[in-house]
Picture (cartoon, rainbow, N blue to C red):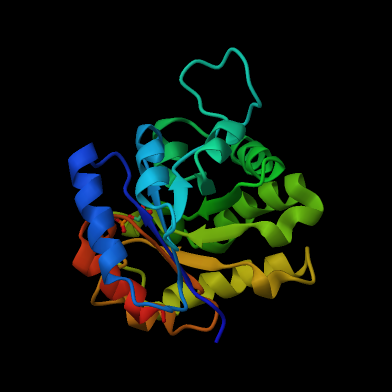
Length: 248
Ligand code: PGA
């Protein structure tokens, strides 16, 4: 079986003390020789803490965003090169909360993915439809449009992406897509990647949206679901470890 990847998205949660306790519990609880890849995406200010706490551990460090710009007069932004200095392996780009609350367009998301790749940070490109779009039968068109912008921008580097399908209506709502619903969209994304690269099979396709300890195994059993992007459940060590165990 292909190696799965489980990424925790802490969102705007945590503190120095809470992070230290959570990371300690994760380090202790991860199975020795576990096969699944594991990473946590923390707020930017805590990346230095993660670099120290996770040194020598197999848990990868993720950022929740990255600037599309290399450097300069972009107040408040953090560049890919800066992330790299703190050992960051992954950066979420185009999370629906960034698209929704910060007006990130497909073009901006694509530029961010490109900026990350240029510095050796793997972008986790998030795509997903709103409830309204799903009900209007636009799910496939929306996710394809979102991914197409990135594929077009990164060209031959497409096989270096991670893609996360996160239906917006499932994020933080406790309403998970059924394994069949998720698989159907993942198959669409896989086909789209396959049209762009002969290495589509090695692009991890993560599912996100109320993945939890109870539903992870079923979701991860689907053919084209290669892992999870886990929000709420990644803040509780026991739940996150159960999800990781389901991915072994
Ligand atoms: P959730 O968030 O697991 O809390 O639904 C997932 C995400 O937004 O990445």
